[in-house]
Image (cartoon, rainbow, N blue to C red):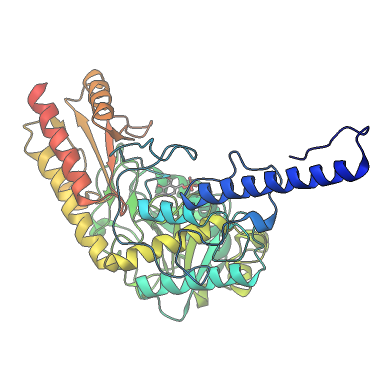
Length: 450
Ligand SMILES: Cc1ncc(COP(=O)(O)O)c(C=O)c1O
């Protein structure tokens, strides 16, 4: 905002008053801006449209000196601000149990909020930063290093950040790997592995190792699988997000590279990476916001891509260029790094697994002892520790009531996937055991009252 006085005033007075008023206005605006950013709110609201760099608040709430240092607090607070201009307006203790994009640790969101305008004293937001800047390249390297540390990833595996989500990898996997023999085996245990097998038909000959069941809820007995020793790879989905079917063992493939979609359970347990040729996961469930897909791939599998493989889906190209072949999803990669910090500070994947067992056991026990009020169709041997689908009295009307009352009790995102209906509680890493315990009390009360 600038003040312009009337032209008929004497020049010297005009200049003096204009300068004085404009300087005062600039100082007031800058003060307001600094106050709102220090309070953790977005300065975009109420701030001048074109915000000069010197207006940015360099004393952000982050205490970090590096753009990506490890300083988020291990606790997760449950109250959140809903608006940037009114921090007293909180969401109370709502818990979001959606399947993905899913809840992120609140401390991670607060850290993002605190440093959104100025990442680590760079005077640039992560939303604006060049992917070729030293600051961002350090974020990529640090995030890879944290993934390696958390999952103990051996040196002969690449850690890549790609785009296109899990669905992109339904094509990415065959495009990069099926060229070895033209054939691939698929273990289909739910909607996502079924979709992956279908997509692979475009690039070669995928084959199901066991007949696809009419409804999902079990893993066919490995003794019954017919595995082709000539297959380029054996593909499976470690956790079927829709149906809640999770592998609690690593499939034996007799030397054929094993490929796993771990989109909804990666970093929820230790993984023996050496047993896999490739693991991929879209970030938006357990490790960050939507937009980035992590691919962990063994070096010897980088050289089988079909000639038609687009560069953005080529593991070899991405590995050679440190995931920076083109503009990557910078914000998502940065946020994933913060979630990795949070996991590291909270006891690593071992602690995530302990919590996942505690949380899922609590819910399954309630379902099992409800005398049929609640039912799960998933075989107990492969019940997911991340996604707990169940029916309430097998009655859609009662389920609607359940969802309505759950919302009133501050539990959100519990509606089952549109393809199967019912209820689904997604209890990823960021959902704390005490939050599941509160949900458990609600589940018990609802059964008692209905
Ligand atoms: C296990 C699994 N694989 C793949 C996908 C597809 O991911 P995207 O939506 O990122 O393509 C999903 C999505 O929910 C999923 O849960």
